[in-house]
Structures are given as C-alpha cells and as structure tokens.
Length: 408
Image 1 (tube, one colour):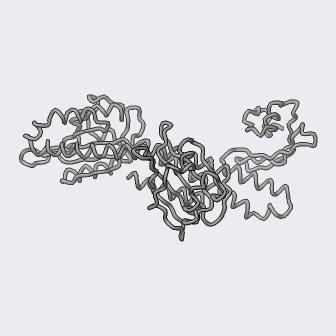
Image 2 (image 1 turned 30 degrees about the vertical axis):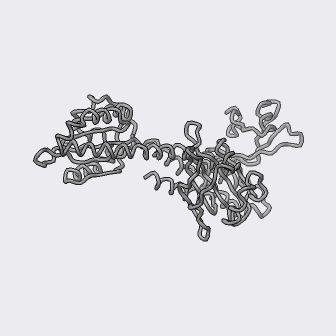
Image 3 (image 1 turned 60 degrees about the vertical axis):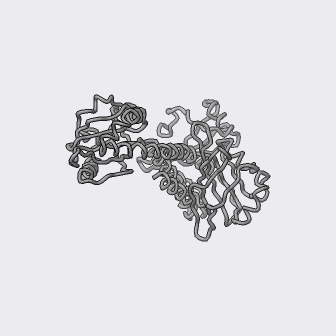
C-alpha cells in the first residue's frame, strides 16, 4: 500500500513539473548511509536509473541535500562544483539539470526527491522550487508512516499467528497466554473482537489513542455505531464475507472518533471458531493511517494547484490580446484570469506616477459582478507603510478596507 502511494507520488510530481525523470529515495543511515530509489517516473525514451546505487559517501551534493530542508536547483550539472564527482553518471544517463530536496520527519532526513531534466538545460523557477519543497514536507510524513507500517507489519504477522494459535489450540494458548496479553495491551494497533451480530466484545487500550474512546465505552455496542453512513454498506458486506469464512487483510475503512473526526484505518480480520469449528465471532487488528491519507490529499492538492497555474499561463500565452498592442484589453484579460485562478473577489493592476508618490488603478476586476473599472488612486502621504512595503518588494496585506475601489 505504501509503495503504491510513493509510486503514484513520483508520477504526479513528474507529470506536474514536466521533468524527464522523477526519483523518490528513502534514506538509511546505518550501518552505511544509503539512498535507495523507492520509486521512479520516466518520460518515454528516458532510461531508468532505478538499479543504480547512488553513493552518499564522497558525494557532496547528496550530503548537502540531506543536511538542509531547502531545495538545491542546478541548471547545468557539468559546471556545478558539488556534482564534480557525479559527472560520469550524468553523462551516462544524459542528465542536464537537477532540482532536488530532502524529505524529513521530526527534522531528521528520511529520503529525497530528485528531478532530472534530460532534454535541455532548465532554469528552475522560484514557484517550482517552493512547490517541490512543500511536496517534500508532505512526503516526509508519508515515508515515515511507510517505515512505521513496515516495522509493525512483522509484529502484526507474529501477533496474528499467535491469535490463530489461540483460537485453534487451547493448549497452545495456555502456554503463551502471558506473552500474548502483553503484546495485545502494548500494541499501537487496535486489537478487537466482535460476535456474529457485530457487537464489540473486546478492544485493547490502543482504542483510546486512535479513536478517543475508553475500552468500556465501546464494549457491548455494535461496530456499525462507529461507521460513517457512506461507509456502512461496504463494511457490512466485508463483515458478511468474513462470517462466510473469508479472512481480510489490508482492508481500508473509516471510523468516527469520539470528537466526531474521521479516522482512516487498515483492518485485518479472521473468524473465531469454537471447539466444534462453528464460527462464533470475528477478531482482528486496526492500524491508523489517517496521517498518510492527509499527506496523500495534500500532495494531490499541490499537484492540482500547479496544473491550474500552468493552465492559466498557457491561456494567457495563447490570448492574442496580449500581442495586439491594446494595453487596456490586455490588463482586463490578466485581472480576469488571475481572479478566477486564485479564487479571490477582486484583482487590480496599479501604476506609479513619475514621482513614485502616488499609484493609480489601471484596471480593477470584481468577480461577483463580472465588472471592470479604473481611475482610483492612493497617495504615499496617506499610506506610508503601504508604499514602503511596495518599495521593498514585500507582500502588502494590511491595506485598509476604506481604500477599496468600490468606495471611490
């Protein structure tokens, strides 16, 4: 599941930024630092590099990336000092430009995202660099979650085997009862049991951390009370399959927490049988994947934002008004496209006078009324802080509502 998510992330990043190759690395710091390639996106005709073991030792470029959260953008890999020892690799795989950034969790590096441009030397824009840094921050959480899930997978396999032994061999249960109880009560996953009607007969203490309920608040209630309406039919179908003798592993579902929040889980479940082999209930585990889901959603939102940004630039570039010398029409087009793209009510364009002590509105577009207007002005003497921020190329987000063009 985690590998599928990372592969999807590599593809979305590669397509959104229009690169030749997108690599997502994990990071292992012991016994020897390594950055194995976790996922790779390639454009047609681009050679795969997934088998190549990129060194950390003796590689100042990688070492610098792992030491900071800021991305490193390289237009020409053959003139960049930190890549001097990697030029043979760059020539072999036709790499011309690189944009890379580390992923991290709790300020500790846990991977890297590396973009290659092979068909040209590319100037990476500030917006592209900022977007990749934002995506890397979300991926850091996802990679940490993937590592945690992998670590807990082995513990779950052992625990599930012990559960099977408990259900199918009473003698084996008695021999390992103390060890089993300790594993259940200290597990970070929810361990649960229900009867054939779906009534909860047992949950371990992890339910408090994940769903917010005390154990006694859930025992005796039907599991369907904690399922969102939109998820109910699917979960009842899965429950029926288990009662028919099927086991489920890696089943994604949703539960409602005590604070009414939605909690995303992965369930594993098997039937419980009595001494005669009759199914008397269901037992299993539930792993919290809410953070990973949020990271997936954030990554998708970032990719959508970039696609919208590129679409607007394409629309502006194709609009012949910009090339016909009609300044007023061009300004009207720019304000309309900007308002729709960044989803704000008003967008305006202003021009300094010759003394730079006054600015005049050349065009103001109001989206709700689909109306253009112009002619308003602001004087530096009335708004000194505002004009000072403009001179220093700072964002100006504190202009008084009274200066809204609607009041002029």
